[in-house]
Image (tube, rainbow, N blue to C red; front, side, top):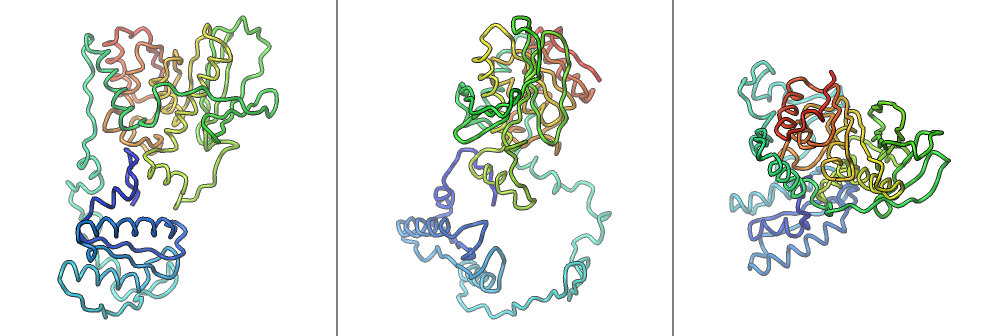
Length: 389
């Protein structure tokens, strides 16, 4: 239902791939998750498409009265459609559709106890070699990148970034435009617009330093659910970026349905991808604001560190990174969701691809940190990598 629509296909094209095979559209007339206007649009176009195949009898629609629920009329219509096309049996379905489960949640009465319907009586009986919990890794193999030989590092890195742009950051232009200043909340806090109608918060540390004494700008990526990683020092000007969905721009979430996160995936995007856009747009804003002479470094902790990592891979204006407590893999629940990223690389590969730029890495798994070291060695930049437990 929530496919990764990487290439931003319209739903008519996706549904049209079923033609001329049997296709049934089912919906409730006041379903808040799947509104009827979209349902009407799709089924009308499908009926036209099926007629071109001479297969108008192979497509149909059922609209039930009510919201998002599997009611008796929906079930009976679905059973009959399947019987017609799989059994050549057009008879009306007369099976009893009374709800056989009674009582309130936690106090239900079942005609057959649920545990008796299990294929395996207990969890202990589940085969040790089951694939169910990792089946996604078998349907689409996870990328396994070997570290590059020194003479192949540049090709390895450019191919990795090229593949990421193709399937993970597909909508990104070659150069993301600088964010626009929109308004000032107070002397330290400003609102920027990274894309039309997308506002983000940028604040800076109050400092009495003369701008001529600034040796480095540090952009700290700050998410509501992660701490801030900083290494204070003289000559450093700190900015704090809260990308979309955080701070003043945080939207209401409820699991389910999490409308914002789900809708992005249907459009071939994720919120995290948009946050990386925000970070890069902020970097370009700072570059325009402070000129070309002061280097910009980036910092983040936890999930924010992953966003900072990819911003650095995609934006040449970021010249160094300080990253703390990254998740070891994109399989980790703490890692922000990015479509198809594991088809290309995992966190250690992406960290290594930052080379030859300076990388200060702390709180990272020792075995995976060793993988990053190997890639930095291949790039001839091992002196630019600092590892702290």
